[in-house]
Image (cartoon, rainbow, N blue to C red; front, side, top):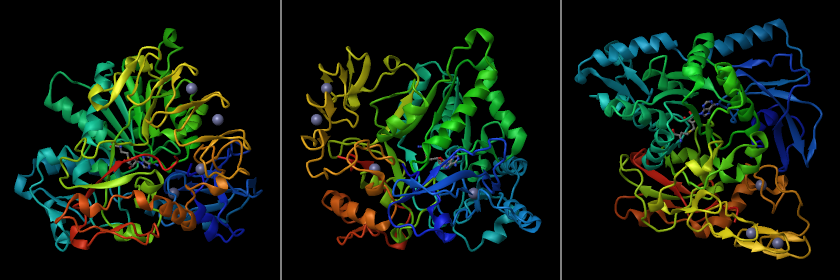
Length: 561
Ligand code: SAH
Ligand code: ZN
Ligand code: ZN
Ligand code: ZN
Ligand code: ZN
C-alpha cells in the first residue's frame, strides 16, 4: 500500500519531476544483485523508482528502507550517481553519528546497575525516554522524571515508554492486552516454546511476564525491533536492535548470532515468528526479510525435516491478503480481528499532518484504515469490550499454521464452520455457491451470480463494468484493482491511501459523519475537541495538559466499503 508514500519526501526534495498527486514510489530490485546498496544510518538502503500516471520513470534511486519521512532519514542517491571520496566519508561520519549513543553492552551494564538500586533511586526520564543512573540525574533535573520505577514497571517497558510530549511522534499502535493474551494463549496451545517477536514489543513483554509469573508457561521470546529504547530493558539474548525492512542488525554479527541461535535451538523445533510491521510498510521488502529469517531457521533443521515451514503469524490489515499470499502462497488469513490501541500524545503535531517515524500511526492514518477512535481513560484497562456493540478492526493474522488448529474465542463472536474447518466471525456466512465462508471484513457478504463470487454488502453489480462495485463508482475505473490497497473500485492514482493532503481531505469528508464526537464518550473529563471543519489535518486536538492521558481505541470498519 504505502509503497507509494514511501520516500516521496526524498524525491520531492531532490526537485525531480513535479509530483502531482498521482505519483508514487515503488521498490525495485537492483539490476546487479551483487552491487551492494549504499548505507544510511538504518543499514542498506533500498532501490526505488518513481511511478507517475502508472509509468515508471527511468532514473532509479536509493533511499532509506525504514523511514518514510525525510525528516527521519534524508538519504538520497541516484542509482547511477558516483560519489566523491569526500562525500562518502561525510556520509560514513553521519551514519556513525546517528547510531545510538550507547552500545548494546553499555545498555546491559546500565540495566544491571539500575536494578540493583533501591527503589527510591530508580528514575526514568520521560523527555529522554531513558532510565537514569544517579550520575545522570543532574543532566535531567529540568526534565519530567518518573521516580520509584518498580520491577513491575521495568517488565512492561511498552507502558513506561509511551512517549509523552517529546518527539514529533505521536501515536504507537500496540495490541490491547486482550488481543495479546489471546495470542499468547494460542501460541501455548499450539505448543510453541520460542517466539521470535519481530516488531511486537508488547507481545514480547507479556510472554516474558507470563513466563516469570507462572511456572507452567516457559515460552521464551526474542524481540527484534528498530526501537532502540527497548535495549535499556533487555539483556542481549532477548532484544536485538533490528530493521525489518532490510534485515539489518545494528549490532552486527553478535546480534545476528543471537537471532540464529534462537531460531536454530532444538534443531528449529517449537519456534514461531510473530510479526506486526508498521502498516505503512512495503510488503515486498518485508517478504524478502522474512524469507531470510526462514532460511536462517532452515539451516538448523535436520535433513528429514526439510519439507517443513517456519510457522509464522504476520499481523497486517486484511486488504493486504493478495499481496501477502503472492509472496507466501501457503498463508491463510484468519478472521480474528486483532485490536490495537493508539496512544495519542501530541495531537498538535498530528494536526500538522507530517509523516512520522514508521512505527507510529497517526490520526490521519487511523482514518485511512477507517478506524474510529474512542477515548478510554485508564492506561491499564485499555480495552473494555462491548461498549458500543459492533466493533471492527481491519487487522488480521496471516499464517501458515493450519487454520483448523486455531480456535477463536466464541465469546468474542467467532464460530466454527464445519464445512471450512476453521473458525470464522459470526457474521461470516458460509456461501453454498462459493463453498466457503467468504467475508473478509467480518460483515456478511452477498453472492453475486454474475461475478460468480461473494462481494461486500454495499456493492451492486454494474452492467457497464461487468462486475460488482460501489453504487457511486466511476465506470471508467480500472479492471484490475488498485496497486496500493488492492481494492477493485479504484486505481492507484485515486487511492485514498495516497498521502497528499488533498486526497486525505476528500476521505475525511467522506468520513465526517462517522466520527464519534469523542467528548461524548467521556463527558466532563475529556477535553478533546472534535473539529467540524475536517481538514483531516485537525481531527482532534488535545490541550497540552492532557497530553498522554488519552488512549484511543480502534474500532469500526474499513473505509473501503
Ligand atoms: N502490536 C505490536 C506493536 C506493533 S507497532 C505489539 O503490541 O507488540 C510496530 C512495531 O514495529 C513497533 O514496535 C516499531 O518500533 C517496530 N518497527 C517499526 N519499524 C521497524 C523497522 N523498520 N524494523 C523493525 N521494527 C520496526
Ligand atoms: Zn535511513
Ligand atoms: Zn459466494
Ligand atoms: Zn457482480
Ligand atoms: Zn487504493
